[in-house]
Length: 123
Image 1 (cartoon, helix red, strand yellow):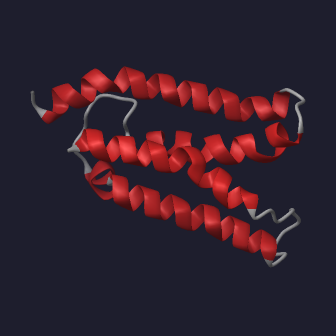
Image 2 (cartoon, rainbow, N blue to C red):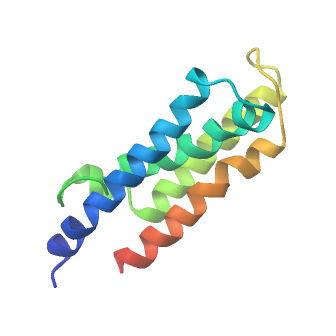
């Protein structure tokens, strides 16, 4: 089976994951929950749903500069740099927010498994 057919066959599953992750992350601002819910769920789901978006996994196959640039490895590295940069800015007091070292774990908790799945399926 060619790359386009394989990608297009998997796109609905990625789209469902995108909807679940995005809905769950946004629900943290609509639904009152405990400290885990308000402190970590968006940090867990945000990078993951954006990974699916940036990689174009949720839609039909396309060959363009965007998709060529955002390989699985490059996307993971960029996202980790951004997430860790945000946390570093919080640590340095660049903006009014609370530094929490457990946010590092939250960022990678879904993002890295998605990357591993994407890398495996992309081969």
